[in-house]
Length: 182
Image 1 (cartoon, rainbow, N blue to C red):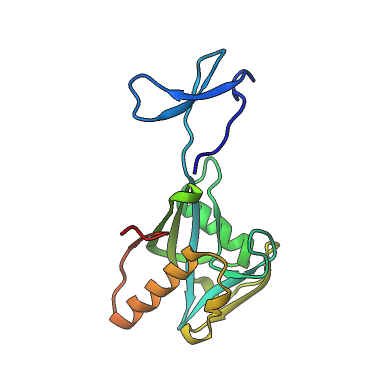
Image 2: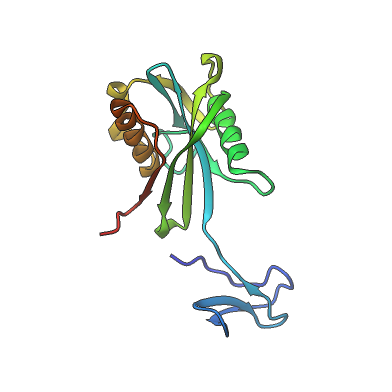
């Protein structure tokens, strides 16, 4: 899915989606200053935070998917690392801090131009609260998770792999894509 661009962010002139010499795909190129505008996927950073045998989920207070549950995550901001972005999102959505354990899942959504990085972390001191982007925040065992009310396939993927890892006594990094490639 290509993002549409009409005007150059350098000079404001019209841009056109054209073949660029030496490149392997079309790009947005400014008619006036000849700047080539590269569009790239957005990085979403978040964390699967656990406490004892439960995981932390947030019920969304914002669109998209208002009222559905997800792992705390959001777009990475300029100037921050993926780890910093995940920590910020967990604080914003769940009022919580966590002890980083590593990368849990990398999940691709090529049709939405997004790449998710879900870290694994232990909830610090077992404390959490609703953030401004959450209606509700709670800890769930695997059996309690509202699987049919999950906001995003990325959260579903990360949660399923987490509980599989727990049953198998391992901690792995998982790669996924939606829709799955055949």
